[in-house]
Amino acid sequence: MPFLNDLVTQLTTESWGTLNSDIFTSTRTSIPVLASGFATLQLTATGGTDPINTHNDLLLPAYIRPTAQAMIRAGNAELAMTRAIAARNALYKIRNTTINGTWYQSVRLLGDLHDSGLDARQQSRVSFNVMGTLRP
Image (cartoon, rainbow, N blue to C red; front, side, top):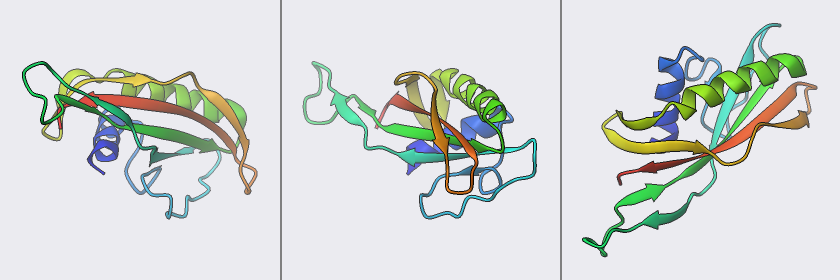
């Protein structure tokens, strides 16, 4: 999942966290409960939307638009929201740049942050969705 890998690269560059330590990209991963004051972020691909074509090329899309959900978990709601805001801001910075060899026009938010309630381990969750516009 190159899109998720690129989002992880951006989050790591922005010092949000580290893959497989506090950032995860699989629904099959067992998300750890971290010590108080720390949060985890799980990225899940959500399918995307229709590609964008240009008048010059109708056989292949000019841009593809994958989507993902970011789910932040923490021991309390305030920390989950604070870390979600930091993740959102880190991803929102992606504009007219190349990440891991892929050119991105943008990554934009699909709605705002929202409280996703408690998980089965009583951790607070905050989530948001993003959509990338990038060259295939």
